[in-house]
Length: 68
Image (tube, rainbow, N blue to C red; front, side):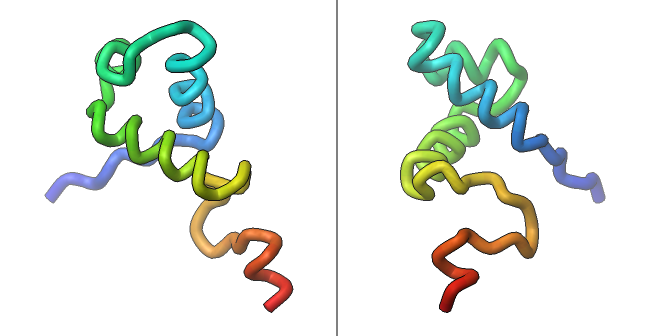
């Protein structure tokens, strides 16, 4: 059984920035990085929905969840 590849927060954020900053399409950006376009789409959605707190790692809560 193979282990899933892990990507750093910096890699994900750099990958996401290729679309608006460099004018890449999602599929072109994903292809140039060697990742699946659906994975990049999921990262973009996560970044947009978490108000800048995406990719915090396992066990790290968002500031709003720490308060409750």
